[in-house]
Image (cartoon, rainbow, N blue to C red; front, top):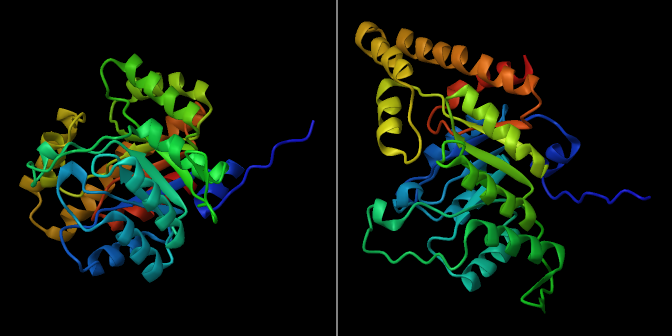
Length: 311
């Protein structure tokens, strides 16, 4: 029987199809039209990652449009990006147009997300849309790419993109989240990036359960470059808690080390010491296909992550 050829449209898609263990990063454009800082971060992480996500107004806080930012970052740096798109702000008609627009701008990877509710952000009066959910967004992308049509209407020059989805190992109950991932897999999800998780036993349980869907999994990690970042992440990011012992360790560095260079080096080393055994154990169990590092504004950590993965 002839094997079905897997079509690939990007470096990320090709690497995943080949079974390579991949490292992706994350870029978070802010409330500005000037992307110079984000572009510099992209250049610094580029030697170590195969692609970098570009966020779409996380926590419902308005930022520069993620599709425009993705295009500009790719153009300025040559680093392949993963355009994050949420269903929070645009209806199905608008999203379909954006998918075609993304292709025209040279974007070949998209991460389909629900998006944080507008009530959380700095424009809480904005009406959320949620015409689709993340699974039906994945299906929309796959239909447009694979059939070259939308709602049965032919697209003259169809888009070619890879589409991924998100998963949250911290969700309660876990069973409900696993069923959601099943819906995404059925819709045609090509890779999964998980939310940040620090509990190894829970991570093993969760990843073992979702392996049955046969979708490549990239573990979400969040190395923390300072105590302030660690505390803020623990306090303000929904669905994630940083273990108390890690917060205490990071706090001790802030209190006891006065030299800034030494303090940075310690934070970097502590991140390495935590994530190296964590990732190594999951790889031994064949539960991972890659790592997605969400540590925005912390590009100096990537050489250490690269040594964990390729060292």
